[in-house]
Length: 572
Image 1 (cartoon, one colour):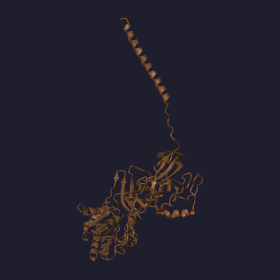
Image 2 (tube, helix red, strand yellow):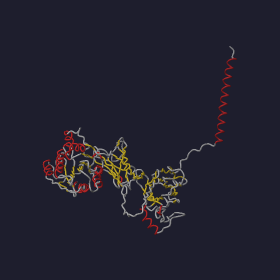
Image 3 (tube, rainbow, N blue to C red):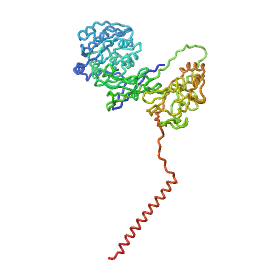
Image 4 (cartoon, helix red, strand yellow):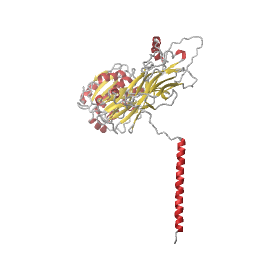
């Protein structure tokens, strides 16, 4: 089941914060001044693509109100050869590009082109219109000029809008959405814009007027047609952030501790608009962290991204953004044929709580203290454990540890367990040993480290399986692992039949969790500490010091006494 992005949160250091509130913005024209808008757009250019709803629910008269709104909006922009350009798409079942960017750069020509558009009618496929915007609507867009798409709709799209909208935002297009009537799907408006601040709602097409054009133009222009505040990106397989700057950006945007990894860094050469910057990275790279939530059920994905404004050095003006996306699991609806008989059918439902899984490094023994500092070559135990939430007496789940790697925090990764849970290098880590419950696995190893990199962190995936009806057979423990060079003792034998069963059944697990250890600092040798003196020696020293002190006091008293007596006996 594909996860659905449900909620997002973002925190920014260097005194910057952003809270996104998912609600449509009502139109408030109280502070909108036409002269202020005119001043704002006079010296600023933008590429605008306007998407008009031409579905069957609109009708010819209502469609003409959208054309009038398009002319109101065009009159607010600085339409000229060197100023703003506008393109227009009307969409129903099949979208149509009426005219492209730069085709009409005189206000009179543009007004004539809008008035001659004829109503199309049909189904509502907003997603196709967004794709056409990406494929053809941006043709003719000038480099370095911000791009904006404005979508007007009165209902619900019959196709997906989230993916094409995300592709537009990835192409540095800022999307606005205007929902008309109370029948509009506000959730789809949020999916299109990626930010509720750019969602507008009105109750009727009569409100598509000059006042709304003023509000929309001011909302775009006051941030110079760019994101006014950092915005997070929660894609189906990627996570990131976008922002705008007051001056052309000459630095780098990168994932914290991964500056030297090209996939985790973006510089000025990657930004078509030098004032619209950002970075998106795949879940599988740049040490992106993922962990599961049980209530609500889903997965958190998070990463820290640094905006470094200088091309070479980090300064106090730099900012770090911690991006966190939450992907809620969609409910599964299963439809099966129902046989009707005279016998009463009893339905039973069993709900299992997912276990809590952890990955730790232990000192000296599998249940020893957790390791945060270790010396090179020291014997340390890997420990993977999933604890049944419903109680220790339950025996519901089993686990398979697989896809493990070690990271030094600078993007250098080495795989140590493969996707089947087998060790890859006996020097680094052999195949783990599982106990009979299949919820605990351990393996000793000797501490190693990267050259000139003292910090290590291990990360693995744990796939859970239900033990009932042999649900864990062929999944765990791994039965197809070969003996590694330098590996001693028991090892897992290779069985071709078992391997085929493992590959077939691994996808039958009930969930996969990302787990990782605390960072471990590796020392070349254990620091030498001064040994305390033995207790008897300390006791002897105290006696000696006491005797010396008493002797000094006695001598001082005698000296004072003899001096005083001598003065008394002295003749007058």
